[in-house]
Image 1 (cartoon, rainbow, N blue to C red):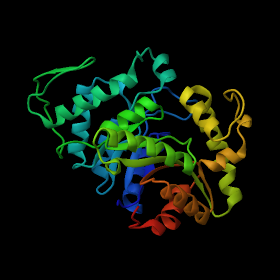
Image 2: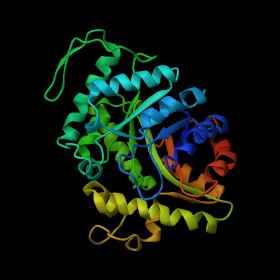
Image 3: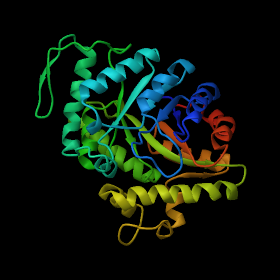
Image 4: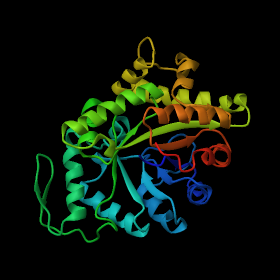
Length: 333
């Protein structure tokens, strides 16, 4: 059994709001503060700083919440460099860092000329190198993609290792999550029942390798729009979730498979009006506090142990902290 936990997804646009959001998370009852990685500027929303830099900056402004990335792409940093930076953030935060790791966003990497080959195949070795650097004085390792030759990292984490949560939606990545990761992070495109089925796959993979399936933290990235009236929540939430579903379902093969699993018919969507409202409601948390509590309960029943919440409406995080978080205080799942 674990205590049900909630992390606040950081508003990376604009930069000046990030430190304020971190302090809010720390003071209002959230369990974690999470920063995404955006390499490409998006419209006129301002600058988005590198996520580990942000977490290092807010480490001294916070005292209770753990600090995490959701997620950094492995193709963008050699594992030795990421091990060094992550250990530094862990030291600055007093051992509160969680590394959310993924294979990166193909279209974003291509736009900046970052090679993107065999990322999923590299994932297992990448994790192995990270852990050896964090745990061993003079690590030696020879893999198909990476090697270590006895160099000692100049800084170690506060703990024996840093928790690694892997974001993966395809079968190979989910297998790696089950085999090696401390947590599995889903994206938005899961109904409660769909999440339960996917989590069962991850945990079967863990058990096939001799691990306890329950040792892996089950994490759902949740799109939330919570307001005093359902109409107000829908005004922001439905367009926000449709934009997310269009981006993932229309750009990635795994996302399109997820859309079809939720009942979507037709070719990959090219416009938000091709995505039915019923699909938005099926995979998000939109409504009054009571309605959002009901949705959280549905996901928790399917195995979610940690929610990374991304808020789409102004003031949503404050209302959530006041009227939703207290309902789940010390809830065991």
